[in-house]
Image (tube, rainbow, N blue to C red; front, side):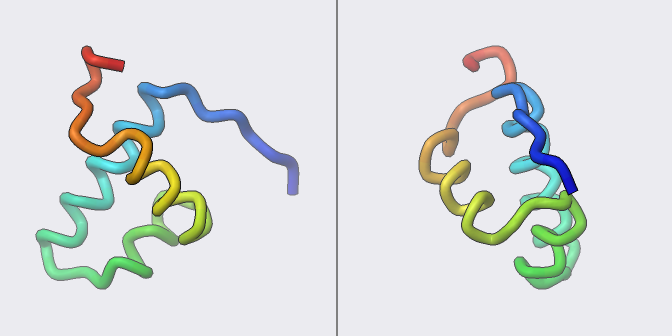
Amino acid sequence: MGRKKHTAEEIVAKLRQVDVLVSQGRKVAEAIRSIEVTEVTYYRWRSKYSGLKGDQV
């Protein structure tokens, strides 16, 4: 499987998607798997992009 370079906008959208899934009752690990990234990548993105909105990126 090849690597993909995500844009900042894609990252923020995926982080929001995980937030929505978790608020709907899914477990964090399941939500992360649904956006097709590893947990390490998710937490790294969250620490870097937390609090940003799509237009702030």
